[in-house]
Image (cartoon, rainbow over all chains, first blue to last red; front, side, top):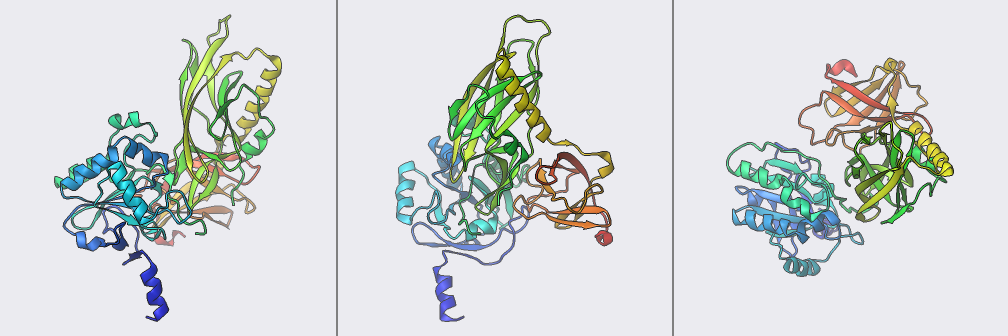
Length: 203
Length: 263
């Protein structure tokens, strides 16, 4: 590796370790990513635990619906309380809606009382593209063996009405309940809904 | 870049056919003509709304009708959409002006105008998305002769842009070949540019280019399968556009799996 290559590699916040698609019932693509406190998170280190990936953009009305209602925070609290690792992922490119600095994000997390395990900063979109994350929110669940077991929407009501949350079927709750009880996930794939992930435009 | 949908071109210049309500990034009105009622969206430049399958992101508009007893309103008819590039993703939707129309029947006898209203929820997006709701109303029938003529013209133009049944001689089928579906048609010349819009999510990669080949009188449209497709569907349902200014068709292509030598 030349010095320049090393510099480039170090500059990237997210490193996909093996490139293949995120398909349900197949091993979830491994990655390293830096969180909002500067800690590097390596998916492989969480083998043995369930891992949730939540794509987020605070400027998006569908993300806002989940946070204004407290629903996302509830999910984070409840499932991390049961040993689940919860990574919120921010893939907005610099200059795009939802792009934030680490410091700004940490202030926001405290303000909205969010409690993910960590927020992964992905301004290059590498992690987003690795998982083909399309919307905010877009949810993925990885089981304790490292297999992707859910890919899709947060729930079945694609409105932005907070009042719809109590009558929605939450797919993340349902999948985690089933999988952690040793059962197959009955709805493993749904269409995610929301704003597009704000990747850099020149792709 | 963005391909213009015929409906939008046709509707340009037909603005203000009814009392339009200002809504986020545009105007919305409820319009009607004999046998039809419709939501006319007139969007600011750069903003779009979504088709019934919004594609990679977004949500489709929803309407709840309120009408007097005896008035029956059918399903919305969706003009063929455009592929809208969005941060490397592709959405299916409309820019400019679009009329989402539905058939309406009214009681045979009736002296007073019938008031119909629609509760509409939708998302309008550009760099960011705004969700909106509005209640729009109209009276059936439209009494003003000038207004009636304008509306009739608007509906007639939109009807011509609605997807038509595919002629049976087209004999469409979708060959399931590993990573893609090979959509085959027996009825189009090599000069046509075909674009398929799937009615259902997670069947094909919405953002993938659709490669077209013309061999021995058969047009092949190669659609990259979605990574999220767990089992092949019995049929690929959707809308086929055949080039600017040409007809769009509703298709339901039976999915067939054949041997590797099929290509």
